[in-house]
Image (cartoon, rainbow, N blue to C red):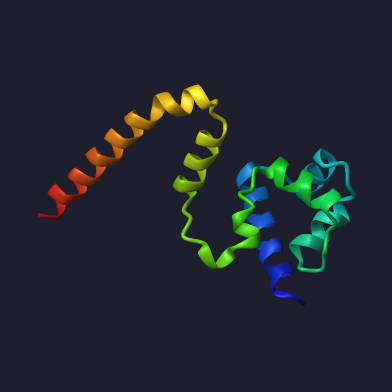
Length: 116
């Protein structure tokens, strides 16, 4: 079994469970047979792009989790934050950058104060 099959299977299973899908519900969402999802999660799947693309999109998986697993320093909160930002328009992103910068600075100041 190639390493990428294990990475893909684990990422899909975690994302599916977090999204609240059963294997059958996810399969129906991407117009595939339940065995397709089952095989991927059991490291037996080597899906073509026509399966992988709708799967990643339906589960809102950050593709870096699949293709760069060694960079995984993700937490559920960071993943959620990335998804929220990804849904912003350019104007919204421009507007929230200073707010986010200030919030991060406040959080860091609070953590520094709590440590002392």
